[in-house]
Structure formats: C-alpha cells, structure tokens
Image (cartoon, rainbow, N blue to C red; front, top):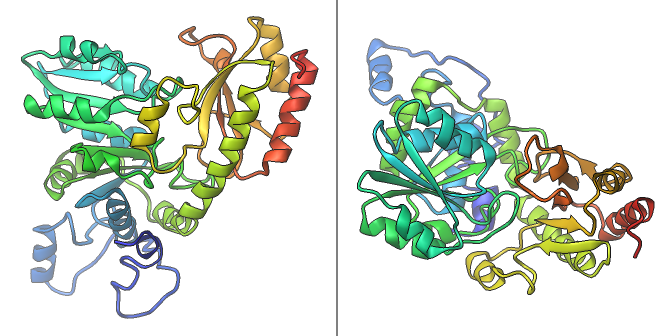
Length: 384
C-alpha cells in the first residue's frame, strides 16, 4: 500500500455516517447496546467490537490499523507507553523456567524487565555482544524461547546483523522481538527478515510533537489476539482515545518530518566529526563507523540521532559544554520537533564514557544548531 495512502486515507472512511476530514475522538469509556443479543455478540468478540475502552476503542483501532500497515504486519496493538508494549510482547513469549537472549546496551528499562523483574519469576536472561556472532552461538540453551533485539542500540548505536540473528532463531523455533523505535516505521526490514514481533515507542518518531506517551506491538493477527486476551486486557496499560487521535494527527506529517530531520542530521554529524573538540562520533551513517555498510543495508531512511564523545576527560568541561547550549535542550526522550542532548554524565552509573552524549536532531535549521554548538565549544575551552 502506498505510504501516503496509509498516512492520510487508510481507515478514515470506515464510519459512513459522516465524511469528516479529521477522524472523530470516541472519548467514551463505555458503549451500550440496543438488545441483549447485540450485547452478547459484542462480548463474544471483545477484541474487535467496542464494549469498554480498555478493550476496543474505535479511535485507537484506527491508529492500530495504520501502524500495522506502515510496519507491514497483519495487526497492531497500542499501549499507554513503549515500555508497556515491550513488556506485553516479552511476557507473552516467555514462562517461568525459560531463557531469554538479549543484545547488550538495549533500552535500560527493557534490560530491567528481562533481568531483575522477570528474574523473580524464574526467567533467565543472557546479554550478548550483538556485533559478535560467536556471542550468540554460545548463548543458546535448551530452554531458550525468546531472542530480543535492537539495531541500532540505544546509546552506542551499534548495528547488528539482524538477518543472521533471525535465521539462527528460526532454526531453533525461538520467538524474536525487535525494538524498531530507532529505525522508525519508514524502514520495513524487520518483517521482511522474519521478525515475529516489532515494538515501537510511539512517544518518539510516531508522535513527533513531544506531547504523547505511547507504544505499539506489530505482529501477526494470531499473536496480537494472544496478547490482547492476556497481557493487554489483564494489565490494562491501554492508550487513551485522545492520545490515539493525537498520534493519527502526527502521522499526517510523519514522512515530511523524517525527511527534514534526515537532512539536518547529516549536516550536524559531518560538522561534529570534523570538529577538534570531538573525539569520535558514533553514527552508523558515517563512512567512518564500523557498522556503516550494515546500516545502509538495514535502513532506507537516515536516523536523525547518534552519539558523540567530547575530546576531554574532565567532568567540569563536559558540564560547561552542556550548560552553554541555548537551543539544544537537555532531555531524556527524543523524536519531537526539538533537538535534544542526553549527556552520559547524568546516569547514576558509569557504563558509558564520561564525555559521551546522545544527540537527537529536530527540525531547527542546522545553522542555528551549529551556532549553538560553537558557543558551547568556546565556553568549555574546546575551541575549533
């Protein structure tokens, strides 16, 4: 299906009563029925018919229809956060006494779910170096039931050979989940490579306006039905109709936003790579990056986010640099219209180098962002 058709037309005219340009928000917790037979029929098909908004809500269902089409899956299920979507997909795939393999440097809350949280229920996890095929080969166990992937990873932006990972999992009948938030819905490779479930934090690129928290699981209709009848309805981490409507709104400009951010990201990445105040730029779309070839194979759209290390080992210099930024904001999330910086020095651990920082490029003009960086380099003593 054509991308523009999905973003602007798919599912828009399912209600023949009105031809609204903007779809309605069904801001109702409850839905009633004219007869007992109608009520009974709905109760027998709660996954698809509106009864109570914790189950099927028409506004949320319209968003799910679009997201499934964008990701190339049969169905999708929206949640109140990206972490809720990840948790539902993972918990639907493992039971006590089973083993999970996860790439290292995955999203921190995903690692906490797989480690401390599910560990309480006798689920074992092995974190592996996603760049090393031998690391995966050594991690398999008789009771391995799930392989969890990210490419690239959250902070260090390592790309992994997803095709190899999926092929190895399929040989063993192991379920696969890929967090494709960083790749975005404009990169369709996960389904084409055979990934069983694709998860996204809708808070990021899908929203694009820094005003919604949400998540989605994209998979086969059978898997989505299984999650709906178990984790989704039981745990209740559902998306509100209003948030779903805001995300439908955001999809109107999704492709335009991504294309603009892509242009900006290349300019800023090249600028930082050639700046003497920067030690290294971790951007898989740079030719100097060890995973550059893999990134070009996996992604059809450049990701407007990467990390870099300042050319210093002094905490004070790093903090002066960050505090000097006027237009690039210090914040933890990303995917909106504003450029954001997340310095590793704010973490309560030392997993990453002191001078490492993740940069998300928003929609501001690159000249403004470069001038902001120049001022920060000057103030911190890391002059060009």
